[in-house]
Structures are given as structure tokens and as C-alpha cells.
Amino acid sequence: MRTEWKLFIYLAVFMLPLGVIYWILSREEAGALLLVVTSVAFAFVGVYLYMQSKYMNGLRPEDYNAKPEDGTGEVGSFPAGSIYPFLGALGMTMLCYGLVFNGFLALPGVGLIGFAVIGMARESSDATTAHSELNEKANEGAPIPPSDFTDQVKK
Image (cartoon, rainbow, N blue to C red):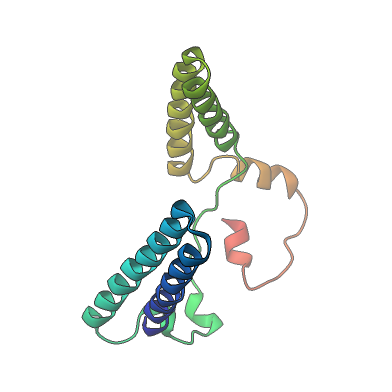
């Protein structure tokens, strides 16, 4: 975690003088303030990561040099293609347009977002959604090619 906090602290140290120099040269308050606030945000994250690295004992899981055999076992399920992200984006678009231009679009937008969230939650809890039916029909009678993941393909 040493690298992460150093990166954010270095970015904060870089952005602070940049904001000051920008204000001195342009006398434009908004841009200079945004650069200084960006520096403070980087410093905040850097200090948080530094404090977390002090509390950690030993290496994190991502610090190990893993071998391919370390990742063997059950992989899990992966989401199938879904209409719900599109419906969520459409609902968010309707909500934003409704808040800006006319309120009659905001309420259906909120409803569509709620419908999409519930649909995605129900879809993610059912691991067999759209997978087993498609795989059985597509591979009907076809031999499964041998690979390291043959046991996963059969599931």
C-alpha cells in the first residue's frame, strides 16, 4: 500500500503549487480554487491510505505473486446480457430531464430506476438466469473441447 499513498500525496503536492501559480498568473478564482480543492482531495485520499497501511499486518492478497494454480476451484457465475442497465440509464435520463425541464418526466424516471434496480438485484441472485438454457441448446450434441475449465463448462 506504500505505492498508493505516495502516488496520491505526490499528486497533491503537484496540484497545490499549480493552483497557486494559476491564480497568480490569471487572477481567476474559480479555476484556482478547483485546482486547490483537487490538491486537498488527493491529500485526503493519500492520508487515508497512509493510515490504513499503518494498520495492516503483512502483505495484502494483491501483493502476492500468484501462480495460475492458486486460482483453481469454482469460479462462480457471471451475469448474462440484460436489459436492466439500459432501463436504469433511460430512467436516469428521464429523471434528469424532468428535474431540469419539466417535472412530468421525473416521476416515471424514478419509477424506471427503481424497476431497473429491483430487476438487476433479482437477476443477480438467480445464477442460472439465461445461462443454462442457452448453453444446453447451443451445445446439444456437440462435444465439449478439453481444457483446464472443462468442469466449469459442464456446470
